Amino acid sequence: MKHLLIAIAAAILFIPFLGAVHLFDWDEINFAEAAREMIVSHNYSQVQIDFQPFWEKPPLFIWLQAISMHIFGVNEFAARFPNGVLGIATLVTLYAMGKKLADEKLGLWWALAYAGSWLPHFYFKSGIIDPTFNFFIFLAIYCAFRIAYAAKPSRMAILSGVFLGLAVMTKGPVAILVSILTLLFYWIYKKGKIGISLARVGLIALSAFITTALWFGYELIAHGWWFINEFVTYQIRLLTTPDAGHGGSFFYHWIVLLIGCFPASLFLFTYIRGRKNKSIYAGSAPTEIKDFKTWMWVLFWVVLLLFSIVETKIVHYSSLCYFPLSFLAAWQLYRIAENKLQLHAWNIVLMLLTGLVIGIAIALLPVVGLYKDVLIPHIGDRFARANLQAQVPWSAWEIAYGAGYMLLIVISCVLLFQKKVKAGLLCMFLSTIAAIQITIVHFTPKIERYSQGAAIDFFKTFEGKDSYVQVLKYHSYAHLFYTKKLPPANKNYYNTDWLLSGPVDKPTFFVCRITDSEPWRKDPNLEIIGEKNGFVFFKRK
Image (cartoon, rainbow, N blue to C red; front, side, top):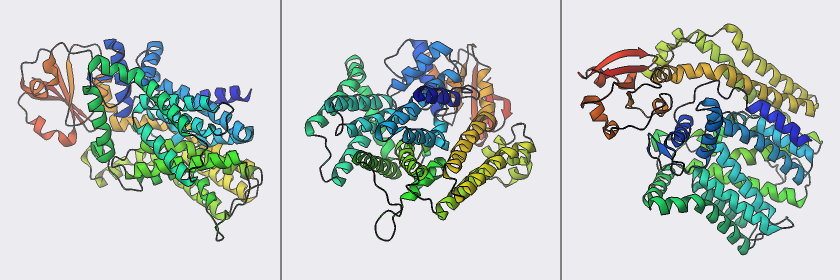
């Protein structure tokens, strides 16, 4: 019965308002456009962008989006719906795992820790690929853990391999890299006593190979090695270079997880050890729980350190950490609620300060909107200044959203100081859920109007029209998805020089950012037909 109640609660959290805001460039529109082009071209075996082969991602998540678009139409809701469904599956799965590991209380805390933290919750309202990838790879690692305890360990090994194969089919071989590193470091920590025989490791590998071969094998037979070569080359480049300018500090993901996974992330500090090299919160746990904690710590550090080393720094690269982080937090929540662990004052103060920082950030959003004219002269980036010129309605009362969240965080911490532990914890996580929903529904559409709204509006005016629309000097998929572009009959379309100065056979339009517009303003073949919020719109004469 509780499985059903959790599923209903998750559906209420993750399904409504999925289509309330345009898809965001790049990633959301990238995958949605690939799904749309599958439907238009009827080519479901190859991923395409602009009706040309796209080798950066395998097709599994894009298949899910294509199915959704067949049901709901080609729109934002359909693009995000697979992750909404996955959010339901994730919370039910976490509850079931927690119940199996200990009891239903642990399962409930785990589901609450995941849904009640900012980024883990937010990603289920998106159309990016990572929630699906993370879910499959986590299931693969969980089934590998279960091999040592299951009545039918070979079945667990097969399931582990199947889920690992599905993870590869979702995002690529990084799933294998993460899994091998996790198993290797777990093996080192346990000094080889891991309860998984070489035969079952081989069974995992065989199951993963068969699963991935269902598509990679077909692709190899149908189109040869070139796609796989390009795919592997891209994956190596992604790991070794700051792709698309997404570089950053070694500690980038540490900060992302600390702030983005609040409040759950703060409960990792309760594992800090005391002077006697013993946990300052003593307590015992069954062998199975201890072993699973080890798996989760290993997975957490493998992902965090791996993507701290990787040159490309993007927020969702460390999102696989959400699973081990939320479990480790849930275990401490479970012990705190059962009076087996005591929060220290500094733990509560740290939660209070972090929550207040996030609440202040929410409260400042309408302040920035209301007083943008004062802020604009102090911004160095010309494109950002122009973005802020967008006419977005704000009112002073919206500050109450951030202030209300801060008040609830203060109440939560007061309850924790008063030893009203369960009430304080529930207040903190439930208030965060409410704040996340308000931010997604109320603030995200307004932020989107600043960042890309003018360009999206322009692209949408060309839906159903026989014309060329192209972007200049910046990377985007929005002009493909929002013009509902069809396969070009004239292959010269792919030559930008031809579009700019050749004998084009259709009305031709261009969009660029204001920071890159000077050369095009002087081009005798182009005329400016509009300029808005940082974007300049041109038409071929």
